[in-house]
Amino acid sequence: MTILDGKKTSETLKKEIAEEVKQLKAAGKKAPHLAAVLVGDDGASLTYVGSKVKACEQVGFASTLVKLPADISEEALLEEIAELNANDDIDGYIVQLPLPKHIDEQKILLAIDPAKDVDGFHPANFGRMALDMEAFIPATPFGIMELLKRYQVPTKGKHVVVVGRSHIVGRPISILLSQKGAQGNATVTLTHSHTPNLAEFTRKADIIVMALGIPEFLKGDMVKEGVTVIDVGITRLKDDTSPKGYRIVGDVAYNEVSPKASFITPVPGGVGPMTIAMLLKNTLLAYQWKDL
Ligand code: GUN
Image (tube, rainbow, N blue to C red; front, side, top):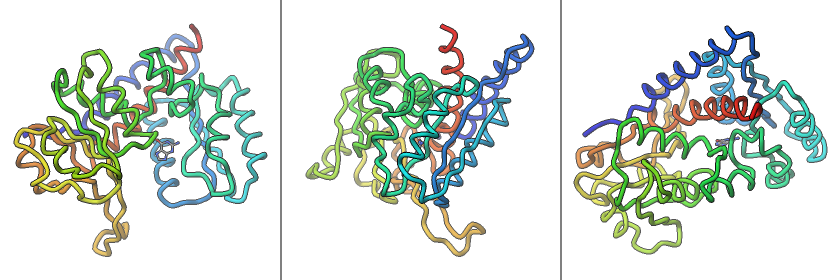
């Protein structure tokens, strides 16, 4: 069994990006600049955005955190977006989700300049990705593809079962794995809450991508010997024995599933750190594509 070590791989990636930034700066150019918009003070979102800003510092990017009150109007948020679109110094930015209920998320995502949309959530980027065109690929599926590539996990002709059809993970990863290319050429089944007898699908799968958000949902008896398992779950479970008061649990019952797996991502330290590294990668791409 090989552990797909996202922490180690993300560190390697960050070193590679830092090296490119060093060369840009040595050539007298400005560093790539990522901005993050955070509305409200949701604990998990604060942590995620904090990690993103810290990662920028690690690789020598400039970063800006735009912190806005939870009761900001949709109109005022759209004005902030317009400013970020117009600001030439900012190469890419993200609007951390979820947004407060009174704001139409779709309207906000549509207002982001696709050339700065380093989350890859704008329909222009999603459409371009689906049509094999150059695009910003959402960081989580992009990170999964990069892990598969760096560990040379075979995908050609394999049967992939994706569990969960979210716009951020399940839907895009199902497209990417079925596309032509070194980490693609798989036969993909996209399953979701209305799939009957899910275990019948997962038991036949060569590769399972769990993106459901239900802790330890995938049990040992739901997979075959030799399976590759990608666990995208990051549920916070209350845990008074931990200093933070919670622990992060994936969608996979790791102790049951890992003995049967040929490759598996741990939680934490699997897909999560890759997501942040790929956001940096997308920001570097935004910087480079601007000059094309
Ligand atoms: N909320 C959960 N995941 C993400 C992400 O990848 N990007 C943004 N902007 N918000 C999120």
